[in-house]
Length: 223
Image 1: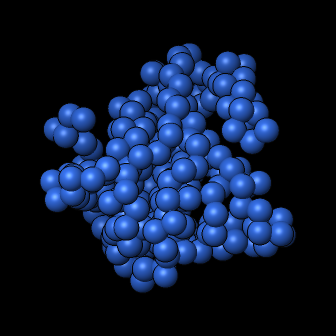
Image 2 (image 1 turned 135 degrees about the vertical axis):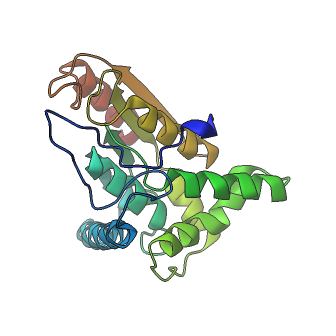
């Protein structure tokens, strides 16, 4: 990964004279005010985790029947939530689908990966199982969940499909590519699909190709 390209500002570009200020950002979180970034991500991820827990309960504990994901900032929230979920989510999520988004605080995550790569001679994915959820929760000031290594491994085994427009005028495709690379370095199975000329200045799912990709992915992973 080209670490010089990791973003240290809001990933949302100017669009038609408007400036977007999401409640949390990518890169090292240097865009101010950082407290709002962290608090927004903390509140959002904890809320989504509660929704997932209730859905799993309704499904009789079948977490593999949950399909999880989001678009743009929704993808960022969903990815962060997925990676923080061991200890509250028991078992593997059925699949994750994200579009036109990013991972918040990519520089922090990348530094953690490089640190553990330098310390552990074993497979990186194995060592990341032990620390990544607690590391991410600590970034937003959440106490770590009581998770077991096998629960973390189950979450990291969730199949992932990411889609991103090469001409996305709102969130640059490089941020989606960074997300894909970071997830792969954690040992996750990730498929990345690129397209062009989608609606909303490229910041949307390409029709019908993107939806066909999603349908085929879900059929292959959940059948």
